[in-house]
Length: 257
Image (cartoon, rainbow, N blue to C red; front, side, top):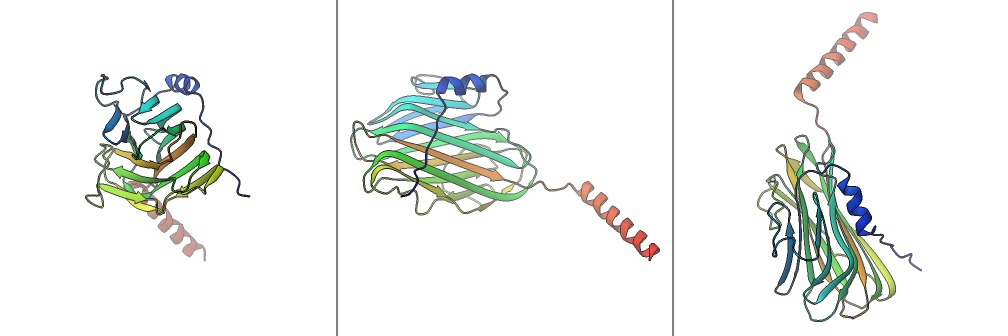
């Protein structure tokens, strides 16, 4: 029997209290879409009834949501977090959706999330993404898909790629397909896609697309992550010092022999 993937979501109060005590950088985006309904929070602009309204909680660049999106319902928590501004080699964004129900209708749920203000040295490294689903009950056809984006424009945009250096995209193929039955799960992992950092800042974003059967009681949870791992590239001065040291060592060894 396949061991189920267990998805843990820390209670929202504990998450937000912990984040409030630490410094945060950059902005964040969390947007739900289903049919003609869109529920948006974008911390780059002012809070209003249409932006970060009812159901949202914002602490720094962390956004949480509980409530309805059209005919979908998030009972426990939706939250997007990041390690903005990242460390010298790694930037990552995370999305957790706990206890999602699709109450009625044919429309899928699309979740866009992103964070900006990541910093890294100029260089190239892989862009990757991973995801996992866990459900009380799975009906044939239930699935999820994930696409990750990295942009030197630092704008968290989610769109078709425009150029190799401005936007690199990775797509999970074929996606995450849990087997039909009770207490089922699945996981997905993307191939590496080259991403070149060309400036002082970049953004990471992702789109999760969820197809879940309709039920008043069946719940499913989802995790998604996108990450850019850019190796540190030594500066020209450092390379010169290393080269000079190697030459000096070689000359000394020749004199000894």
